[in-house]
Image 1 (cartoon, one colour):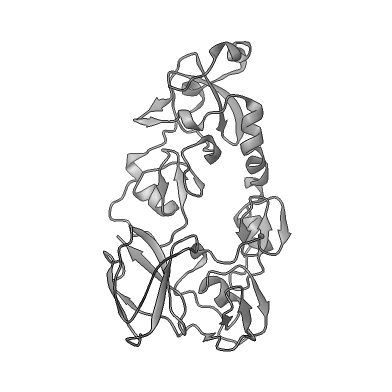
Image 2 (image 1 turned 135 degrees about the horizontal axis):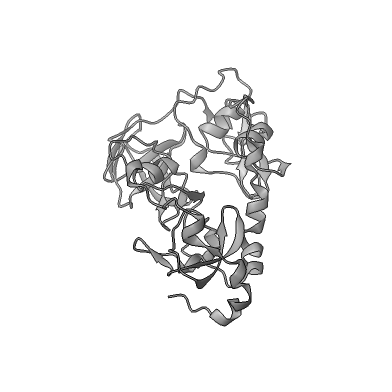
Length: 318
């Protein structure tokens, strides 16, 4: 159990939220679990209300039965800023601490920190000030009232902006009406070049040639290709000037079989001596080799396969 000093909360007992009376929705809804659901092979991690990291929101719902989650991998600490508004901690008067509830930091009472076999004690704060300091900016940054289903954003014309959530978003329209971010600045967030979650296979980008030089020193046919095929957030207009740069187009993509695999896969179109590299979702090189056959000792997850002369290819290891 979390070592709180209950005396420090005595003066606020009258204002403490009682979990059972305020929240009826459980974290896990078993009716949402669908083992036959086909989720995209996309690494866009979310931290479920059960404290487990899922590959994307589709997996959180269909594999975990999650009713709520936050973007990003779980850290197992209060820094995750999990919104526990859907957790029923019981109708007891025990002061448990401060937690993020339905978008705001509130004192909470209940019967204990363990619910359904999940220990939620790491996600509580000692004071409202500590909660606001860690999660307040996130709460104020996301404004659901900005959602407007009548606005049709252009999903083929990236013009990255950096949101107050410290994430790079596609353009001003998407960041406002789709992602509900209240404040942003023009341009990608500092240091953000590559992110595997931006890669979408089969995205029909415009075919017209309007080359850009990506932050990976590769020339892409246009900005749409740089975002969806290269996973990039930064580029400059015009082709790269560095000698030997490969002009990437939508038709030059490696074929991997099987995909998903258990780590053994065949890369088509590769010369026996051609080098290739595998990067994880954070852009870190985890494997490299030559030739068409790979026997990779990789943990289950989503990776990106690179080889000079070809567009990046998503690789799934089960």
